[in-house]
Image (cartoon, rainbow, N blue to C red):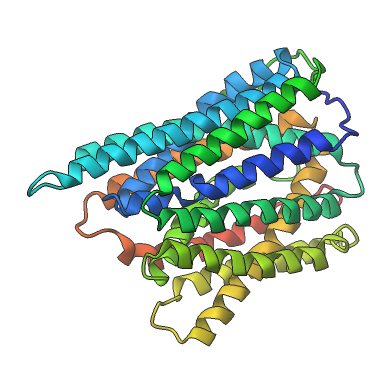
Length: 413
């Protein structure tokens, strides 16, 4: 498939981008970040989490078509505002679901029905996938509009540090609120205040300028499956779909169990690792653009595989020092890989017609996300227990599979 070019307006003013990142990162940290562990406390099992992920991927795939149409018709201001509105819907849906599940649990001699939990997993996944499509696609498009050909590593490192600060502050506050008797009301008030403030500010400060200038044909799921290049992007995009939520949902749930299902402790641990994460990015971000050889990327891929091996053997019974060293190594290996991978991805995106390359990646990754976790959910539903006994096998599988990232290459290499 030959992708039609989708030109971007150069974004020389970074304030809209960074304000968008700051607000959403903080809001994500407050509650959506805790989505799998929050629902775990309301009767979800690993199979239900996998079903939630599958629904998220399916909704993301469907929503991409609506995002493309909106990005070509709406102003940058309206595009950003709609993302905040969908964020509010996600928080509202999550609170309604947990209230309903709590009410079910409070009935005498009853627990939340497995069918009810599965239904909420599908509904929350649908709203979460819609939000993810709007937020992540808008974020990547804005980032691409800001970067030049020689600074993607530094720029990605800069904005990852920026995101990390606001995200981890949100996570820290979110963990404290989750352990509070009135935490849900705190979530509601904070979300309403921030979302309302951002919408009002964008309406006053941004004009009618569009971000995506092309009126060409949309990228679709079908056309994405026909896409091929010399960089093996097709295979990598399929592969990356599996790992997207292994890190954000399964791994987070593993950490939650390590800290004995305590939200405050989980938040503190994540924030502590974030400090190490930020230091790592600060040291790497200004040098990654100089390290263009494929050997650096291959080393990063090997470290990523090592991180999954370490996850497979992480145990709550480990000594505190051993646990801390393991978590720091996992954080470093994952951070270095994601920096190297995203540098390569955005460098190639610039030479592969910008936003269309981003959309092909999203379609393929999210489709595999929906398919893989849908199959995994069906398999896990066949077994008794909460499913956590399968973490080791899943992470060992991920360690082997992650080596496939080594296929990603630039044409000159």
